[in-house]
Image 1 (cartoon, rainbow, N blue to C red):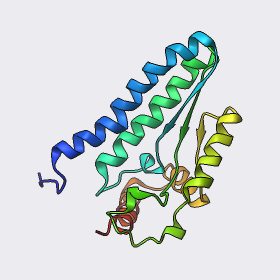
Image 2 (image 1 turned 60 degrees about the horizontal axis):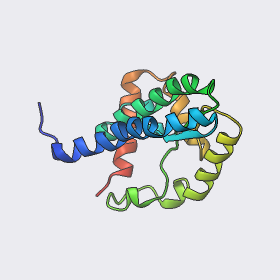
Image 3 (image 1 turned 45 degrees about the vertical axis):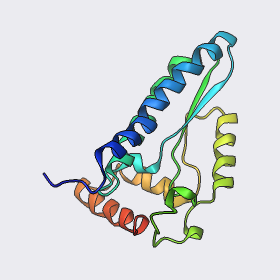
Image 4 (image 1 turned 60 degrees about the vertical axis):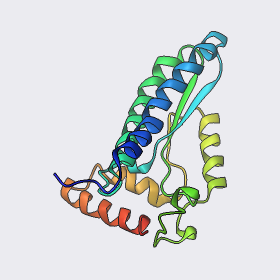
Length: 166
């Protein structure tokens, strides 16, 4: 097995934030919301959670967890009046990419403001899942169901290289 370029403690911190924090915060806030029969949780997954991403494995895999956790939690809480929305944006021009020096230009990525507006609109409309941003994000999420896995793996690896140039 080849040694990862990223140190394990950094990877475990990333998993902790992207999985454990979502569960802990959901369980911390849900009881009070269910008691008052109102409120909601908005969890951020990613289109990365719909395909294997060589070079971004520890980022993509927990996003699958956030997606499935949120989708399953939604019907559990809806009878109490609490809504759960999971957002699956594609690449957003934020500080997340600052150190990566992506070959993809910022104008090719989604902008934070419109993404947030679309997420909040979806929450108001009581949706359970939203793919905010450019149509390419939606296509990358939906297309993963149609593309053979080997081809999907190669395409995803190419995308990660564009985003993670360093």
